[in-house]
Amino acid sequence: MSLIGKDTWNIFVTCQAGFLPGIKIKRMNLIYSAIAIFGMAAVLGSYLLSHVLQNKEIPKVIALIHGLFAATGLVLLIIYCLYYTPGPIESVTVFAIAGMGGLILIYIDLSGNKIPGWLAVVHGTAAVTGFILLLMFGFG
Image (cartoon, rainbow, N blue to C red; front, side):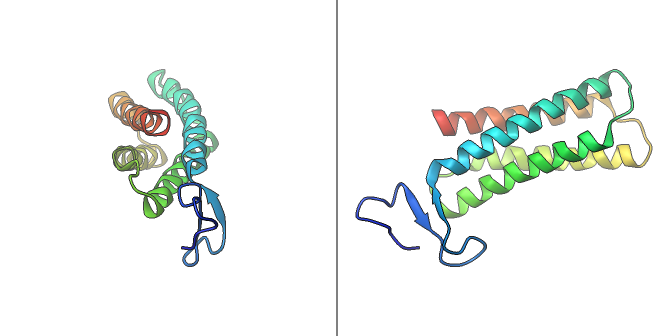
């Protein structure tokens, strides 16, 4: 990593190796982007949870988009943690646990079985907990 100016360490980082060569990133933009992306995933997740609790068919495209948003948000948080300290490690951990629960839910759904409502609620609760921890990190 190289410094752009005398006091810019806390503002910019230039990644010289890995998957972001030479890209300048504002430090908190990764966190704010992750918050926005997880927010979109939460809206879609609420919609999916309503389908599960009403015993309706789960829209597969919505579930896929929800998972892609959540995975993208998690990747942004992991990138942040790799380049900055302190990082939102607690939020990453809780989101990773929620992600594993999401993989179990999609497996159950794609195998043709009924998704247990309690498991969907636990998945959502874990994700909301991770989101609250992320908000506390970003704005606290």
